[in-house]
Image (cartoon, rainbow, N blue to C red; front, side):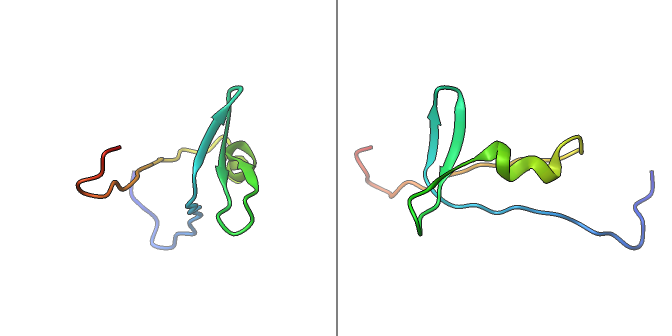
Length: 64
């Protein structure tokens, strides 16, 4: 299938501490401390083909 010459794309970027409690996955808003459920953030992407990526950095030489 050829890609259209005009494309409208949607994306979501979030940075914060990931929380998994009672099978609810949330991310902490670093500015407010509020936990936001990923399901709430993903609602506009429901029933669409998507790709997900998640990563974290670890300081070199860290004991963790």
